[in-house]
Image (cartoon, rainbow, N blue to C red):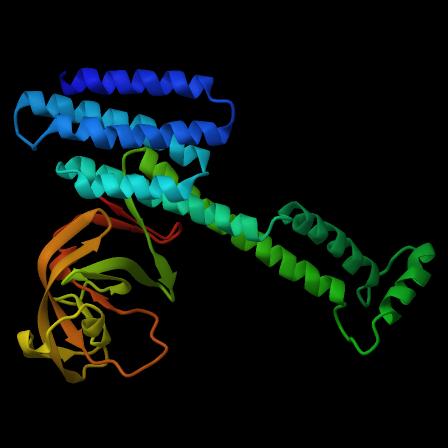
Amino acid sequence: MDTDRLCAQVKERVAQELQEAADPMARVEVLIQALYETSRSVLPALGTPRKSTEYQKAQAAVADLVSCIAIPLIRAGVGGGRGIAVLSELAEECRDPFLKKKLKVYAQELLSISQRVSVFSKIPMLPLIIASCVVAAFMVYIVWPGSTPAPKMASSAATAATAVPGVQGAPPASTQAQLSCVAASSLQRHETRVAAAVTAALQGEQVTRVRIVNSQVLVPVTLSHGGASVRLELLLDTGATRTAVHESVAGRLQIDPRQARSAMAELADGRMVGSRIARIDLLTVGPFAHPSLEVELICYGGSDAMHDGLLGMDVLGKHRYQIDMEHELIRWF
């Protein structure tokens, strides 16, 4: 059976099973099982990447199938753990570079959705928090020193003001209101960033969530060597020729110091320090993988570093990208 017909059959079966599913979790299970089916039959049928018109047609059919499964899974926002695992496994076993990137993006955006759900589960009374902002603001108006409430409220205001002895200035209600509003605002900003990432993914863009600290862009990067992998946050630095990581990472990756050559590195303050150049098996950033890459190991003695090193032009120079500071994203092109 050709790949086009196989994809069409899987899509038809998934659509039918989704209609028959009784609840959201049942629909999520249908989608996850469809991912397993894609792994068992569709990807093997696609075969080795080729440049023929026939292969490109089959590739487009598989990409459409993956989108028809992954997008509803992302929209559902539940069952993220299994979905992320299956999408990541599919990406690892997929031999087609285009489909591999697509699967990784979907896995990343499902992870973002899961993190958002986790944040809200820790604050299950968000509506109550917002309501408390309104009530507390009203209380501030009543009891705030210098306010001019109606005469019949004066005695109540005096009682409220003396109810908490030893507190001067703004009463506890105002402090609680400020904290509650800050919490609600923080959650709203987080939701906006995640929504932007999901929207970009649904529109076919490849995005990576980053952290912005003091206008510095901290990018999640995975280094792999000798069977070990570490996930780091590297500072995006277009002034760095080579990607550099703190020397302590070498031990976590089982890099043999005897195989690293000596070098000199220039720090941000202009100082020159000794360093070592080592070759690692793989560096992964966003949807891109860089095998057999040389990284610089620099000595760092501090304990409060915001990042684990620098992401340099040896990686950044190979890709087109745009930094979205507002939503804390990198968009890859």
